[in-house]
Length: 606
Ligand code: AGP
Image: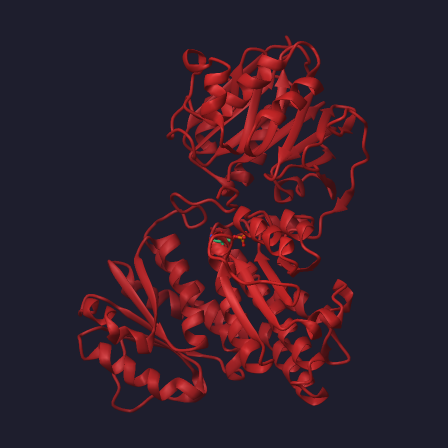
């Protein structure tokens, strides 16, 4: 949450930062601001509640010339959405932007007698005040003393009034990446934005201080010794970060799925069999564990639920899926024989990161399925498989989810093979069906206007229920989240058999029901459950595997025939269809599809 940017070099800092902040808005978008060190060496701030476009208007009227600056786009935690609470914050000689939460800010306010001197209600301004308190000409010493006082998470970019042209950065947990770019040096919260400017970057190690100057970047440890950055290469095409002619990133990212799934899967099929040796995953890791536990949040957790259904049925291994935010507080049993799989698009979700650390402390082996190379969850885990989805900008996750699923299919196939549940022929057949996913998914995408038409029937609904059994239920949990987060329609996904244990009381003729039927073994039960809601007046939108056919006397509000795959793979075409349903509802309601209210793409607060 919150995006930070910094630039020092030979070009105008204001324009570079405004462009970068627009990209970074997916991390938070309730207020924005920049501080630029002007040609007269004075630091000036422009900030406001609202979007980066509002900040841009402010800067057009009253801009700041200068080649060094820091910027911020906010997702409010401490202090409401207001101009004063927007970053950057200046205190004395110090100007900062901050991502994270300073948990002990109240103690610090008391200890350094700041009550009367603060302009905002933020914990971030307190960090600036403590830095100013310790600053007497030696920036590294002031930063060192300050971070020892801060409890919580922070990514701080800092300018000192009497050191023009220089940006300092330090972090604990919350990310900062740094690159040489635009004729100078840049820092940002994540590589999605820096990747536009440079292929080479490094992740600022925790509790190291980076010093950015026009001529280069220096890195120091807490003892003041210089250190060498570990340079990484951006693992996606910069071209992929634009909207590519689509009105929203979400549509573009939905449409990219066949290609990115292909890129995720094909390099990992060797001799016709799923093979993860290129990722450094030893077969022993998959063969020796007695239990699997997924830790993840939101969409990534839903991917885990699909993985659980696959693994349990095909590998016959015990698998749990835990909300990462609950993992540490619910005494989940993990030990040396447990393989903990952390799934995260950003690799920066703090709950997932903390869950990985907790699992390691308990002796578990940890495997990350992450999209962003070098992200914290990847680095904290023993093993990592990257999803190759490329940058995902829309807050609503689509291609990251289906590439996570693709990796879970690969893991399931390999695990079944090394543990003897699959013979060679079965492993090859499984991989063959997986390789067919892009082509089948493309068929759904090509028929997106049919789904657009269906979407119109729920535009004005207050509530939508979704129902299915087994894998169909797992798919719908994600479909329902998509609809909620971007269309603001209340939606619940229910295991069909469970509805009549309470929730069916809510079904009326005004509650559209979305049903997914793709699993032969539960299809007749699913149809019975659908009849139960139809008898209570609900109109049903049906997504059904095309080879199942429809009963002659049944009445549907709408039907979408899903192109057929083996039942275990129907998750993929069905997911694309449900993503499109949510997308078109949001689009036709005239909402900001990519930036739904109250949300942020990367959740770095607990
Ligand atoms: C997805 O549409 C959501 N925006 C959200 O649930 C997301 O999947 C979750 O916050 C986890 O993020 P991560 O994959 O980056 O860890």
